[in-house]
Structures are given as C-alpha cells and as structure tokens.
Image (cartoon, rainbow, N blue to C red; front, side, top):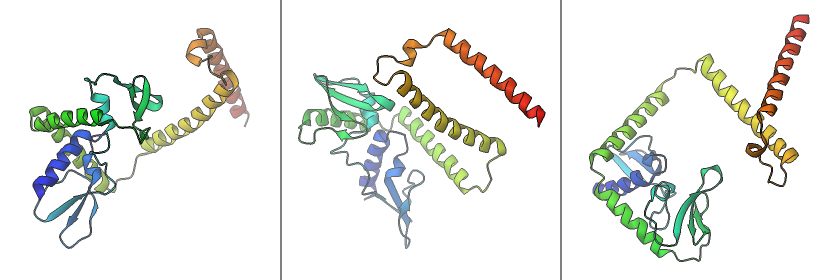
Length: 224
C-alpha cells in the first residue's frame, strides 16, 4: 500500500507549485485521528498517510509549475503570464486555462494537452531518483524540519521583527490605496501609464516636497 502512496507523493512533489507537497497529505498515528502533514512523510510502520480529498486530481487538473516549466508546446498552444504572475495557456491566441481559474471553457476537449503533460510527468517521475531530484528532496526536507523547529519554539519575535512586519503591512495598505487613487486621477481609461509619463523632473519635485515636509514636522515637534 505504501508503494502506491509513495508514487502519488512523488507526483505531488514534482507538481506542487511551491515545493511543499506534504500540504496535500494527512498523517495519523495508530489510534489517533488524521491531521495535516507538516513535513514530508517518513513512511514509518506506526504512521498512516492519506491524500486529502481537496488535493488536486492530476488526471483532470494541471499544475501552474508544470505549465510554467513546459518548453515543448504542441502546435497551436503557448504559455504566457497575465496580471499578478498568473500562468496562462493560449490556444491559437485565445486563453483556455489559467492558474487561478483552471480551464476557462469546461466543455472544451483538450485531450492532446493532457496527454502531452502526462508524458512529461512520466519522464519526470522516471528521473526522480537522480542527483538533482535528491538534492531537491533534501532541500525540501531541511526546509520542513526548520519550519517545524520554528513552530515548536516559544521564542517571541524581536522588536525589530515586529517593526519590520508592521511597517511592511502599513506600507502595503497605504501604497495600494494611494496608487489606486493615482490611477483614477491620472489614468482612469488607460493609455497614460506611469512608466510612460514619469520623468526625473517629477521625481525632483517629489523629493523637494518631502524635504519641506520634514522641516515643517521638525519645527512643529520642537515647539511642543
């Protein structure tokens, strides 16, 4: 039974987009309920493993990783990237699949693409035991072990770490809303993109404004 599970895990390792195939699996010690795997399976006799029902069905689905890595597309097909690094498959220039939504047209038959990726998967599995794959597996194992050590540690984040996380979160919130407002003001209909209209003169003006804001704030603080 373990051999069949190991083969499935091997495929998950090849296709998981972020190199954490154990996220698709659950583990349970004998006599205990199953819980999420937090590291690669050790396949010990005292632990049972099973694949989650929510894990991808690779007989029906494609992995963003395998699509992005593919370099031998059948005639008519091509891969490209959309907004937010979304991976897309085009057929004769029309989008038929993307990594966010899957197949765009559920009633469209693309057996040739499925067969193409099935051959690539079989080739990848056949070379899974090579040095390159062993090194990848070792890195994944080390990353999982490090992650587990951190999870089991009660150490509190330092002040610098708290400052970093709060500052990044604040910047993301402010920068996103400010930039979106700038789009509505300067480029609501497109065609006037920032990268096309930005100049060094604009940048100098922003730096000058920043300097005087700082001086004004310093004077106000000194008065109080």
